[in-house]
Length: 446
Image 1 (cartoon, rainbow, N blue to C red):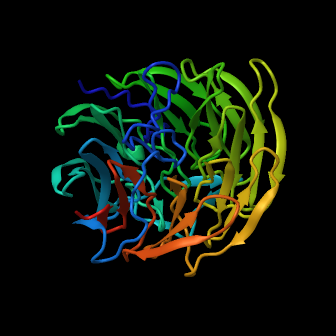
Image 2: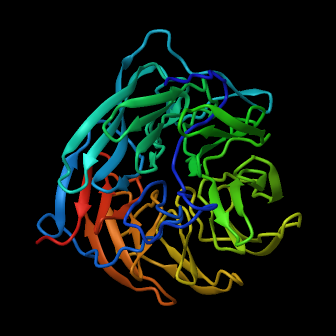
């Protein structure tokens, strides 16, 4: 079935938060990485025994070259990995980006471009055991709607899978559902999505039978939250947001009483009923760019912004019908892109320069700050954690394994080279790392 509602103004991109029995039931114990930031959308894995050292001759199981560029993170289910890529081509005569207006004036960021070029957008299925490319499809080949920032790509959204289908979002270029054998099941064309010419960054998620998309645009006049039937692509509900463009991804929070769909934006942190789209509560935002994905436990949500101000805020989740409370704020240590990590009783922040801060989540008390890495680096990827360890990915291809806990200790430094924007994935006893030109599998060599 091919479904094309053709509604202008919906950012669709995807990720997935598995919920099979009730609400957002955790799958952290399963050896899958089905969406952006893993089983519970928080960067935490239950894997054990993955090596913490690797190099060209040690613990690299396989390396698969990748064509084009893409910042989507690997998604893993069983023996399948899914990725996307963008191959830029020639200039298309007459092609140009839409006009963006900010404060009554035409807005054009000096670091944006490429809407005048042809772009071939691909989705790949890769064998997790061997690195062999099983199939490749090209859902879009031609003109794109808007510019992108030079640090972004037209293949930045991470795919999401429910174990039978993979959902692929290319922003204004469409949303596509494939089965595991590569057959196209449905597609949705949302038309042009205004992104200030910076490109797409937010990741939708799955809740029961719904694919939920946070679609914020430019000044916010056409921003919305949308849920589609994952089986057909048909729209189930839509909620207007009236909030300016941001790049953060929503999360599902299981409180014990209910499941909240929590979103961040420039002006507000807003929680919704994921089944209906009805707003449940809201709290003041940052008056800054919301790029990092929030993290949460059953009682608190931790939201962060890295520009123009550095700020992390702890919000107490209210009871049904109640008002949220800001419990504490910490005004440094956050990154513009990289998301915080809540792991094993501590909240970790990674700055753009890779400096680590550790806080007590209940109080905001500093456990340590200024945790430096042995090699100077920039950080765009979000950290992951497993088996008492934290992995920080440097933009230059250096990876740092840090001991989790109240003392900052670097356990190892490893390099694969290349440029790294994608966040790692852990599944099937392996660590999957994406550089812009290759995908690596790290594990114990037999």
